[in-house]
Structures are given as C-alpha cells and as structure tokens.
Amino acid sequence: MIQLEEGMNAPVFEGIDQSGNEIKLSGFRGKKVILYFYPKDNTPGCTAEACNLRDNYDSLLKKGFAVVGVSPDTEKSHKGFAGKYQLPFPLIADTSKKIVNDYGIWGEKKMYGKSYFGVIRTTFVIDEKGVIEKIISKVNTAGHTEQIFNMYNQ
Image (cartoon, rainbow, N blue to C red; front, side, top):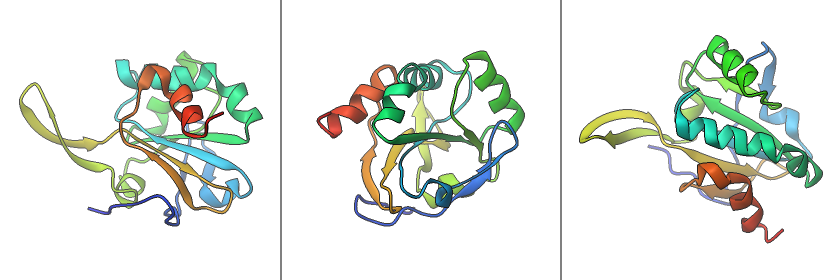
C-alpha cells in the first residue's frame, strides 16, 4: 500500500463528478484543495461529513480552499446524494478505485467483527502547487471543517 506523507507531491487525479464534469488536480492550481475520501453516499458518517463541509463552504472558499469529495460510488449515486443534501462541491465517482489506490486509502477495515476492504476515510489538504500540506486520518465527520481550520490555527 502506498504511504503518502505531508510534503510529498499529491498524486495527479482526474475523474467525473456527479454532473458529468471532468475534475482534475491540475484544475486547482493556485488554490488549496480539500480532497476528502469517504466510503459511501447516504451513510450516516459520510452524510455528516459532507453536510459539515456544505454548511461551512462559504468560509472555506473565503480562506482559499476548494472542496472535492471522492468515493467509489457511481455518478448516479453521487448525483442523488449531492442533490438530496444540496452539496455545492464536486464528488468524483471513482468506480475503478484508481484514485483511492493512488492515495493509498483502500484497505482492510473491520465492522461488527468482520473484515472487509473499503475506503479508509481520509482527507488530504493539497497546497497551491500540488504538494500535500496536511493529512487527516482521524476525521471528525460532524466537525470536519473546524478540524481543518484548527490545523491552520485560523
């Protein structure tokens, strides 16, 4: 498994979002990107995280951040999820799991005593030049924006 660290160049990514738009890391040059990986649309933790980012979206924009979500769900699933919760940012459908593998966050998980493979909820903050500035591996879904701001003492 790839082990990315702060200070490394972020793996280049591209994918299609819930509106059929192509989203690429190179399209965010000059902005900080909050690239957040989540396991599944419409699940409690993923919904709490997405809605927290939505509720604080204007503050994030004012501080120069762009927000991009990624999960292995389909464009159709993302479209329904984004519509239901009025999410103003792109959600990349990584059905091939290329991006999650490139970022090293597809791995073994345990729930109710059973092991399975899935997305390990992680957020990468990528700077204006494409370098990983922060990695959040213990995401507070309901307070994710505050968690990000606290890392920058803002």
